Image (tube, rainbow, N blue to C red):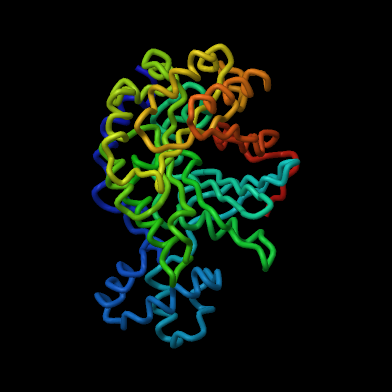
Length: 375
C-alpha cells in the first residue's frame, strides 16, 4: 500500500461539517463564514445582521484585514470584534515569478504550515490555482504533492485568503477572473470547506465571482461528486491520466477503490452533467506509460456518453518523479487521434515549469531562492 492510500478511505467521510479552522483556544476567523452563516453568528452574539454585511465589504471589496480600520463600524464594536475574531489566515513568505509571468505564492498558516498557490496571467484572464490541503493523502505516483503525504486540511479562511493574498500583487485595474481548485490536495476530501469557500467566492457581497468561472478538480472521490455539483453551476474536472485500470492503479492509487468502470459509470449517469455543463478530463501524458495511440483510441471509447472536454497535459518533471514527458511530436499525435475520435481536446501549454509551479509540481519543498521576492 502506498503512503496515504489507507488514509484516503477514512477521510472520504470527513465532509459533513466545516473543518475546524484553528486549534483549541484560537479565535475564529471572519473569512471562515459565508454571508448567511456570518450573519447568524453576529445575531447570536447580539449584533445586527447588517453588521456582518459591512464587515464582508471591508474584507472582500476593499481587501482590509484590520478590524480597527473598518471605520463605518462604531469604535466599541471594532474593539469587541478585534478581541473576538481573526481577519487574516495566511502570510505571504515569498513570491516567485516565472519567465512566462506565472507567479507562485509561498504562504504560511498560523501554525507554521506552508502551502502554495499559483497565479497564471493570460491575455484576457487571470487564473488562480488554489490549494485545499497541506500535502495530499492520495499518493499519485507522478505528482510532487502526493509525495508529501497529508499534513492537514485547510480551513475555509485559509482557502479564501489565497485569493486575497494573490489579489494584492495585481494592478488596480486588474482582477482574478477564474479560480481552479487544482493546487495541493484533493478538494473532495475537504468538501465542506471547499463548499463554504465557493459560497464566499460567489456571494455578490463578498467576491461576486460567477460560478462558471470556478473549476474543482478531483481524482475521483465518487460519493462526493454529486454533492459538489449541487453547489451550483461550477465546473468539474476529473484527473483521469490512464485508459486501463492497471496503469491507473499505479498512477492514481485511488483507482483501486473507485476503478474506471465505477468512476466513469457514475459520471455517465449524473444528470447534472450536460452538454452545457460538461466534465473536463485532465490527462497527464507520460512517456511510454499512457501516451500511445492505442491509449488515445481507448480514451474515446471510455468517455462515450459523457459530455466532456479533454485537457492533455505534458508531464511536468520534478525531482521525485520516475516519469518523463513525451516529445512534442508524440503529444501532438495523441491529441490529433483524440480529436479524430470526435472528442473536444486541448493540448495545454505548460506554465510556470521553471519555478516548480506547473501542474503536479507543487510540493512546498523550500522557500525559493532565485527569482523571489521575500515580503
